[in-house]
Image 1 (cartoon, one colour):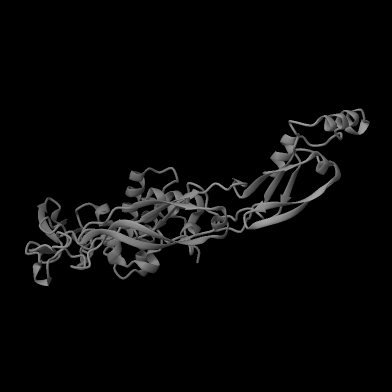
Image 2 (image 1 turned 120 degrees about the vertical axis):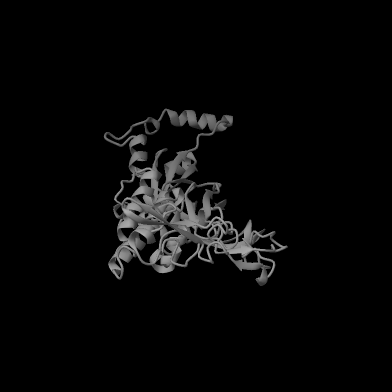
Length: 389
């Protein structure tokens, strides 16, 4: 079953602001919240669907990828990142990550029952780590074929001494006495409509449900230390300079067991010594001598994946463009593939000998050496425009 459009799920347009997207998600999430629709599996799926849409559209990098490539941007081979609550996150993960969207008031007091906001017993652990950005240089061959890169990234990593909880030992981690380990405190207020119950994050433990009496000496209670991680990054074929890929959970580790941020990879193309890129196509300037243009010849030209031999017919004019079908770049997550375009330049020598000058002056008198363009022949501008369609 194909995925629904994320904008359609939240009922917003592509031009919607971050605030409008947030408000739209809150509205949809409240409509299909499990506490409001007990036992309704269809409503629960729509709640998850809305959370997945918001996870993408609330992140500028992921939103830009989705706007450009749609759901394929987060398919296999894209280096991970974004999308897929249905396959990897449960309801508690959603409450933990997006509970703040609903404000401090929980669903429990309004819809009755479980108080699952920030999750019936599913506390928000620690503070989420920040995203990281790196630049990754790729040559033409790597871009054309796709590549897996092993990259060492300096960042905050989980403290192995305390396992991320920030405590010196297991006896130094105690249940919060204010919220009794729930991470939330409930307050009942009498109003003219009757009693109204609100749920607020516990300010003693910041919603974690536990307090640290003695800090870990390795991480000073943060649950993370500054270190280095080698990350395997799968780059799909056809990426372009400036394109950004995202790997979920590969950024800085969160404090005291909080979720890790994302790793944002910006693609940089290394310049090729002979080839130039134009979208999916590759361009190459070929220089030939005047005799080769007159008599014709065979030459080898560089391509992304080696060299190719082409035939230059006799009488080839300067500006002629030859096309090597399928020798360009593939489309990211698509089936299209560009071509290599070879632009012929007839080389005119700037210095000649007296003997060469005499020979050329004699040839100049011949009718064959006087320009006689074929009527109706396309101009250089038209040929270039046609070649790059």
